[in-house]
View 1: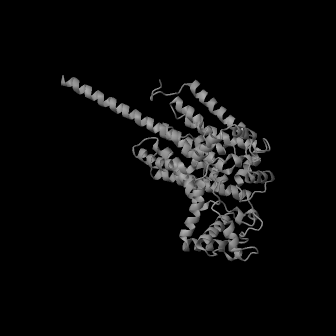
View 2: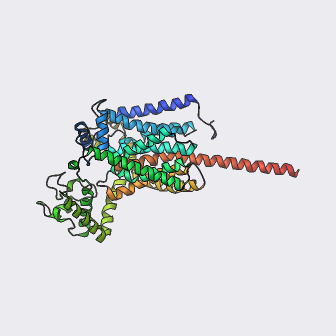
View 3: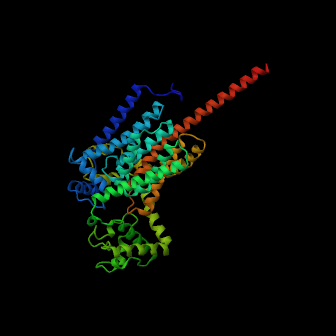
Length: 463
């Protein structure tokens, strides 16, 4: 019978769980092989091959695709790269754990529907999530076992942060959390001037690196100013709710524009159908010059200032629609998708419909949101008690919350894959929470034993 004090440090056990995790990740790769590519993925792949980078798709991801093409032209190498980040995240977490049963449970995490649903997709959301997840696990290990970060690990962490911010725009809003987490880790979890300065320096270095990287790849002529789509989407949502046309003149003066078409095509699902560059006959046009872009900014700011309730209603509808979705499509939807890998189709074909639908319902992120807030407050409590589990629990879920808040403002669609990082950090928090509970139980056992010992000593002295 394994006790709480058992330390599973035998080399054969370490090797066993390494091999087990590798086999599970290999199975994931086989199921999704050669990797799912959406329209956006294919676009980034083509940009990488041609070298015609733009700021609409992340230049970092296209550049990596170009580098991977020297090994093999296709999605396979990128799929293996992403899954390797997930594998090392899992293995790093396993090295923290003493209990073999918990190591085994961690090895099975790629099979959790919320994680498995997107693990085979070549998406910037997945790359960003796995790169930040590995950073989180490296920092968690250092926090829990009081192991100093070596110089190579610090370099790896910086590289992963640069990569994550480079492949996903919203990653920059999570970066402050990860940067200050690194600062806390390098100062033995002490919140002081030194930890804050390290956080600021890390954040500045990563931002500067990504800025210089993008600037070197994207020419001025290739800048597409994609931020406009969010502002136009907001103005459409506010206009529909306020019952008046609040869109800028360069939009309303275009042929084919009408508020009736805006009302008809607007939904808290996504912006795509509203944009002319995406759909023929759509009512909204992007700004073509600096003057129009400045007008769009001022028009948006004025609309938000004068109609804050309509703006918040629009953003909340989109955000709540996103977190209320299941990461798994229905069997009917999946049957109509030709690009799903054959291995995935085989599993779906042999899955029971009732069980499948139950998993779909239970895997909605909205049901998991309470755990995120619970871990946040519990993490603060543990940190105050000087528990080594406090910083990881708090920081992982603060990072997840940061992404949720950023998407509340910047999201253009109610797509659950946008919050994949939040999902991964939440599920990787569960083993940390179990360790914290086991540690608390161990402390209670020791405390009771100490009290019993003291009572026995007093009884002996009394006689």
